[in-house]
Image (cartoon, rainbow over all chains, first blue to last red; front, side, top):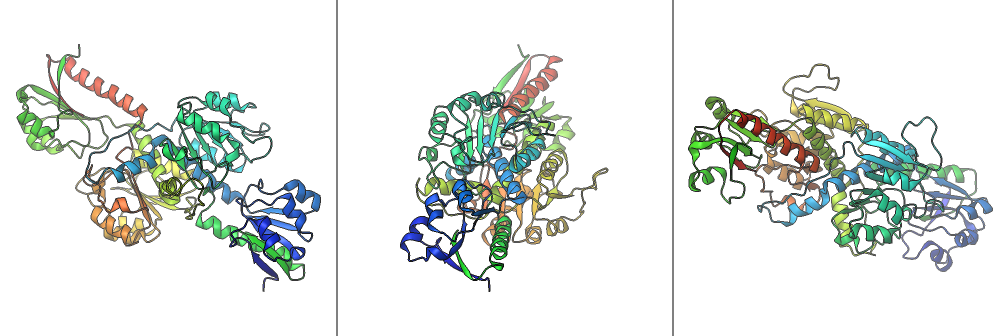
Length: 301
Length: 301
C-alpha cells in the first residue's frame, strides 16, 4: 500500500548503527531513514547504506545527523519542524520561565507534601513584567518567544549570527554583553560548532545572581557542568531546561535543586504537533517512494 | 514616630477574634486593623472594637471582611490591590495554564525521580495556540489574562455580570454556555454571594473531558468537592489552582492527582508587589493616623 517495507529500529534495544550491523538487516536495500533527535545518524551509518537517499527527522534540529556526510553522499535531509513546532516550543519557553520565576513546581511539591491541612510557607515569586529578556537566536522559535513575552511587558533584546533586518529589538553581537544587559536569557538557536557551549561560565556570571536561563534549543548550547556549579553557588538564580547535554542523562545535582525546572525534551511534543508531524513524515516518505520501486525504510523513531 | 502603637496579632497562634478577647488587648483603643486574605474579620470582631475606623487588607479581594458590618459601623476598608497585582496574578494564570497543558510539574517530578540516566517516558502536551479561553470576570486581572493569551493565538471569550462596553470578545451571560464553547476556563472574578460555586458540576460537564480549569480568583468560586470528583472521573482534563475553598486546607485527593497543579495562593506574592504593598499599607495607616492622636492598630498579617 505504501510502496515500501519498514524495518523497525526503534523497537530494538540497540542504537541505529548496531541495529543495522547485527540484526540481519539488508543494508544494501535501505533507501530512507526516519529518526528523532535522540538517535545519532553518524557518517559510519550513512556509509553503511549505499542506497540511502533520504533522512526524515521528526525535529527542527539536525545536529544528530552528520550533514557533511549527507552532502557528500547526496542524501537529502527532511525536517518536519515548521511554524507549528516553533509556536509549541515558544509556549514551553514561556511556561518554563514563569515556572522558574514563580517557583510553581517547587510550590506544587510543597503543597502536596506538607499534609493537607498544615499551613503553607510562601516563597515570593519574581515579577515577569519589565524583565529584560535576551533571546539567543531570533529565528522562528525566538520570534514566537518575543511575541509572547511582549504581551507580558518584557523588554526584548537578542543575539544572533547577524543583525536581523526589519527587527527593532536591540541587537548584541556579543553574548556576554547581551547577558550583562539581561535579566533572563532564552536559548532558541540551533546547535552547531559556533554555538556549542555558547553559554559558558563567563556568560552566566554576566547574567548575574538574579538572572534566569531558559533553554529550549539544545542541551550543548550550555556548558552543563558550569551551569550546575553556577546554580549551586548562586551565581545565577534559576534555570528552566527542556534539553540537556547528554539526553536522557540529567546531571544528578539538578535533581536536588529547587531553582531548576526539568522537562524531558517535550517542547514540541503536543498531540496536535505529533499528529501533524506524522502526516508530514508519511507524506515525505510517500512522495519519495512514489517514484520508486518498492524498497526499504528504517524507522528509528 | 509613626503616631500609632502596634499590637501584633499575626505572631499569635490565635485567630484574630480570640486574640482580641483573650490576650489582654485594650479593645476600646483599637482604631485600625491590618490583615491579609487568610484572616477573617467577622461582624463579631468589628462589633468588639467601638473605635475601629479603618481596615487595610494586603489583597485585592475583601471576601474575608464582613463588608455590611463595616458599612453599618462606618468602618473604611482599604485594599492594596491595583494594576500591579493584576499583572502578577495574570502571569500566574498563564503559568498555571501552560503547566497543566504541558504537564510541566509532573514531568519535572518524573525527570527527578526516574534516576539520572534512565530513559524518560513522554506524555504529549496539549497545544495552547487556537484554544478557546473563557474568562470568568473580565476585570483588571481578566483583562491582563486576555492580553497575554492573545499573544499565544488563543480565542478569548468571557462572562461577567454585564457585557463590557468597548470589548469585542464574545460575551456569554450564561456560564454553562461559556463553558460549552470553551476549551479552558480562567476564573478571575471576585467572590460574593452571586459568584460562590459559580463553577458547579453542570459547568464542568459543559467544559468537557478535554477542558481545563484555572482558578486565580477565590477557592469558593468552584464547588471544590465536585471539582475533585470531575478530575478523578475524567469529566474534565485538568486544573491549575492558586486558591482553594478552605485555605490552607487542600483536599487530600488533589495531592494524588497529576493532572492538577497546586499553588499556595501565591499569585500576587512577588517581591516587587510585596514591597509596593508594604509601602501602600504604611502610607494608608500614616495618612489615617496623621490626623489623629497616638492610638492602636492591630496587625494581623
